[in-house]
View 1 (cartoon, rainbow, N blue to C red):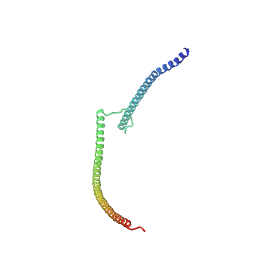
View 2: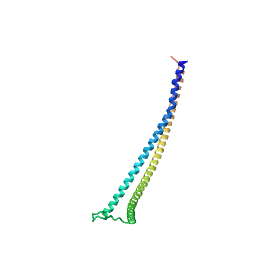
View 3: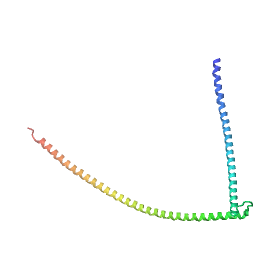
View 4: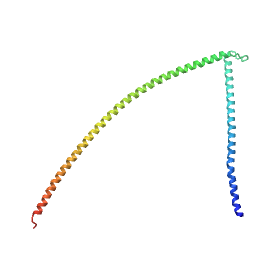
Length: 192
């Protein structure tokens, strides 16, 4: 009985290992998801921080440029005077509206040009379509004519063939009849 227990023991260990594999894979999957979430949050935080610093730098740059334009002749930056926020907003809004109007008029001009080009191309396509349609009808007529000619020629050849066969049959019939008479005449002659 001892050898029998030894056979069961390795099987039990193997079954235990197989039972632990799904638990280990679940643990690895959980660990992978946690690392993924941490990396994702880390990336988002760095992107947000980068955007914030970039926005702060651009606002500082525009503020310094505005101050430089205001004091171009002075050369001193001791007491910067900033325009009223409403005036600055109105100026920016006016510039944006002007840029949009210019770009929209340019786009409108391009669209008108494209529309004219599309109409020209569509007219050319209509003309090509009519040309190819007429060519197709002409070829269809030629095909019908050729088909009729072929049928006529086929009928003519068939009739000639039939006439040739009837002539041949008549000639064969005459020869057979003549041969048959010779055979009867030869039978009637006395043998030497």
